[in-house]
Image (cartoon, rainbow, N blue to C red):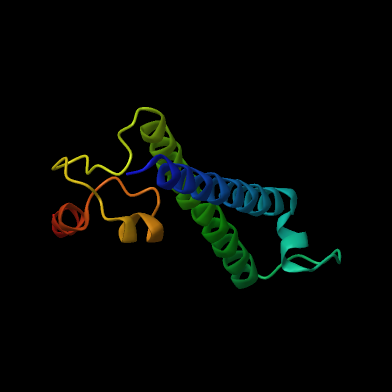
Length: 123
């Protein structure tokens, strides 16, 4: 991979990283700031119905799980940036073959080539 291509992928990873950080901060901040009553939009003094509470809890948990998944992607992006620094970016961590540029464009934090990724997913 040429130096220009490596720089292109580094910029792509950094842009994706910033986007994910912003998303995670928005999701967790909004979810944690709101009380159960504020999250439901009910600011009255009346208590919430149990079904409403369950629905609100589900939505809050869903949002936090979404943020958790995005944090995992952030870790993978940081690992990819480290591989760029170590000159190992673009090599499959399983078979040591080159990961196609097409795959890296679609998933810039990929650490496995397509064949190895498919094997991993079958396990």
